[in-house]
Each structure stands twice: as C-alpha cells, then as structure tokens.
Length: 366
Ligand code: NAD
Ligand code: GLY
Image 1 (cartoon, rainbow, N blue to C red):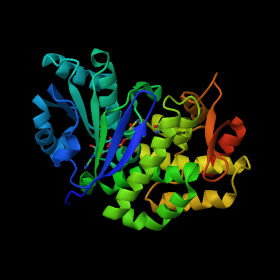
Image 2: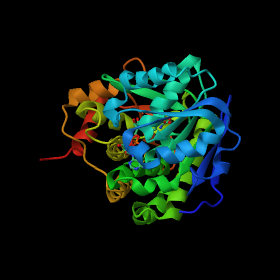
Image 3: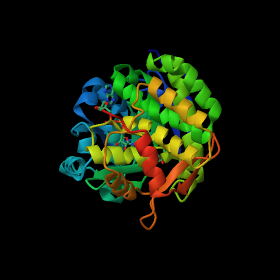
Image 4: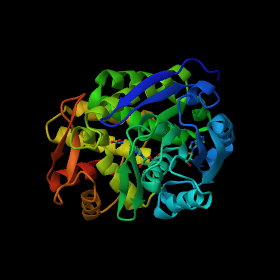
C-alpha cells in the first residue's frame, strides 16, 4: 500500500500532547519519524513473529535518529506478559549501556506495547517511548492513553504505570498479516466504543463489519480513527481513571475474569472482551438501563465480528472471586461499567445474585 497523508488524532493530557498517525506505508515514510528525539540508542522491543514481519523495516526507518539501533525480542503471547519478560528488556538496556535518553519503540500488539511502556516508565525512572502497534486491538485501544502493565497470576494488568508515549504510529499495512482470529479480537474493542460513547458509530460498525473483516482500507482507517478520537477525548478528561476513563473498560470486568479464570492466552483478550460486552449489556438491561433489544443487537454484532457470545463454564464463586480483583473494585465491592443510556456509560455496583443470573443465562451449554 502506498503512503498518503496520514489521518492524525491528537491526545492531550495534563502533562503530555502527542499524535496518533493512521495510514498506510507509515513505517517506511520519513515524515512519520520527524521531530522525534535523535539520541545515541534506539531500542525496538518486539516479539519473534512481529520482528520477522516488520522489525527490519522499523530498524531502517529509525536509523537516522540513533547511532545504535538494537532489538530485544520477548516471548510471544499473553502468558508472557510477566516480570521475567520485562527483565529481558532491562537486561538488554543495561548490557548495552543505554542511557536515559534512549528511546524505546514498541513494535507489536498490546502485549508488547503494554510491556514496553512499563519498561520505559521504569528504566532509569523513565525514558521516552514510541508505540508502533501492529494489531487492530493495539491500534484502536492499547497503544493510546498511556496505560502500561504486566499481569500477575492473581489478576490481569495489576502491576503497571500510567506513562504516555511520544507518538503512536498506526501503519494499516501491518494489519495485512494479522490472523483472522486476531482481527476479530481487535473488533471487540472497536465495537465497545459504540454503546459507551457513540451509537452512530455502532450503526457504522454494524454495516461495515464485512468490509472490516476483509481488511478494506477505508473502513479500517475510519474504525481506527473514530476509536482513537473517542479514546483520546476520554483520556484527555481523565488520564488516571479517577472516574470517566473507567467507561473504556465496558465488558472488561467479565472479560478479565474469563482470561484469568481460564489461564492467560486460552481466550484472546479481545475474545474475552467480546463476550464481556454481551454480559455487560445484559447486566445493563437487567438493571433496567437499556432495552433488551440492545442486548440482542450487541450479541448479533459481536457474533458477526467472529467473537464468542457465550461465557465459558466456571463456578459462580470463582467468577465473583476473580471479578473482585478488578481495579474498579472498591473495598471488595465489584463495580461494573453499564450502558446508561445507549451511547453513554456509568460505573455501578450490582448484587452478586443478579450478576450470576446474567452470567448463567449467557454461559455456553455442552
Ligand atoms: P498480542 O499483543 O498478544 O498480539 C496478538 C498476536 O498477534 C500475537 O501472537 C502477535 O505476535 C501477533 N501479531 C501482532 N502483530 C501482528 C501482525 N501485524 N501480523 C501477524 N501477527 C501479528 O494481543 P493484542 O490483542 O494486540 O493485545 C492484547 C493485550 O493488550 C492484552 O494484554 C490487554 O491487556 C492489552 N490491552 C491494553 C490496553 C491499554 O490501554 N494499555 C487496552 C486494551 C488491551
Ligand atoms: N483500555 C482501557 C483504558 O485504556 O482505559
């Protein structure tokens, strides 16, 4: 794909302002990298799969910015979003004498992005980093907004920091090699933005799902742009999630419980979120906040995106135990993002019995 002028969305927080560039051919275009710091070391953090596809192109592209460009590869997958992987980055940086002006480049999906951001936040108490997301999920969500983290066996993304990147480079060409299952996983986070922020976007997604799944360039560009606009607006108002930002976690309390309960990696993050969106909508309907027709609609959209709409079998007590580890819980009370009304969202507690009833209704039967 050739490079045209990228679409740009700007994220503004109290302490930072940066652009998200969206378009084709961005990695290989010199203008993508202009204005970034020229320093001694530039370090690409990736995994073997993505490095093989795009590592060399990125290394060539950033070579004019750094005297030394090196690469550190982390094991691939959610199961490796751990201290051990993070230490591989620190080992690499220290062994090469990387100073505090070193720029890290996160090349990969959300796992690489979250870990690189956390490594950047910690190394020498903070070095700059650039996000180069290569999954749809990372382009529409995880690379934007500065949430960085690793998992703990007792809970997902429990150890981390808020740390904003210098720039986000969403090169749509990279999505061409993404397996269909991963593309669907990314669509979960795209769909999420509709019911919480923009019902017209949900209409658009519903109509354009076949085009998105077929990697139609214009459809992808719009999906990434609109998702980033919504996320940028929310993050601009509430970077550290003192309230509003929690709405971006619609479906995630259920989704994180599925991921942790089944073991990280059994379901993809986006698959767990997809199912979580249906459960979250069903809970909202159960609380009388949205009509049942919206739940049915969301279920259809999630299914049409190629995502699961039925939860895995798990004991009710296990669900509750896992959901209590959620970062939105307060004093052991689980708080859920609910749709209230369609196109907006709020944070609410809900009685255990009601939550379990919803889960049971949407649990897969053998
Ligand atoms: P991922 O990073 O595991 O990537 C998915 C798979 O696709 C991996 O196997 C990867 O190697 C492969 N891959 C990546 N790019 C590719 C490409 N262009 N071609 C072929 N294969 C490619 O998963 P993900 O869905 O991108 O991210 C999920 C993670 O993001 C979770 O850990 C989740 O917690 C996190 N997340 C963070 C935020 C945030 O705000 N920080 C938001 C949402 C999700
Ligand atoms: N993905 C949720 C957030 O960034 O807040």
